[in-house]
Length: 81
Image 1 (tube, rainbow, N blue to C red):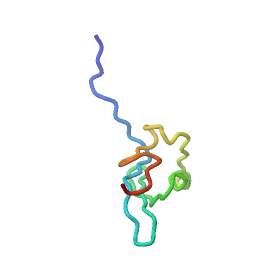
Image 2: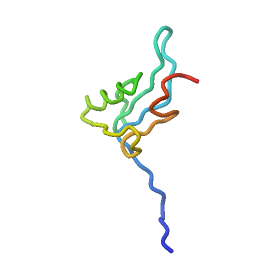
Image 3: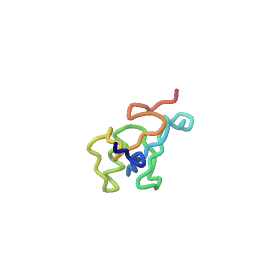
């Protein structure tokens, strides 16, 4: 029987952290990291795509765990619960 010695853990280039409350009068946001470096705030999926593209990373599939990791929700989570 063949077993894998260790589980596969992806290291995506883009990390989108959980929703943070915005300042009074501003919408909530999610902090975005690219290659381990904080690159800004995202308030929508479009912000994620545009920020990544601005840094030379083209995202073809937002559900690809090898490219994007969503922490504290998925690509549809943009408000506090």
